[in-house]
Amino acid sequence: MIIVAGISFAIIVLAIIVALLLRRQLREKYATLWLVIGVALLVISVFPGLLLELTRVLGVEVPANLIFALSVVLLVGVALHLSWELSRAEDEIRRLAEETAILRTDLDALTARVNPGPAPFPRNGDRDTGST
Image 1 (tube, rainbow, N blue to C red):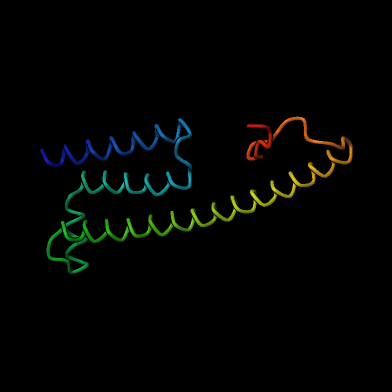
Image 2: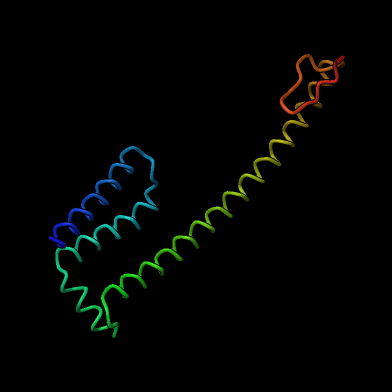
């Protein structure tokens, strides 16, 4: 009964990953990791003796301890990877914000040259200096 539950869980995980991929809600580079995990779950569920043999080879007393240790290593790896991706995204956002500010300044200078006088429409973020 436990084997059937493990196989069912692994198939559900794989189905969710594939569904997220097809709907483009999960990028391929992340899906690869989760597909490997899903397939590993399926293999261990179908062949539970592999987990027992792996615990014996690695010198671990209880198979649950090996699963727990591998899960912790996996989660630390995922957290490290996501931190790296976040750092890259923050750098890109900062660069784009700086570029946008420079382009906005250039546009304001060009607009002032072509149409001297106050801007006809205030931009987002510009303060309303009208009467109140």
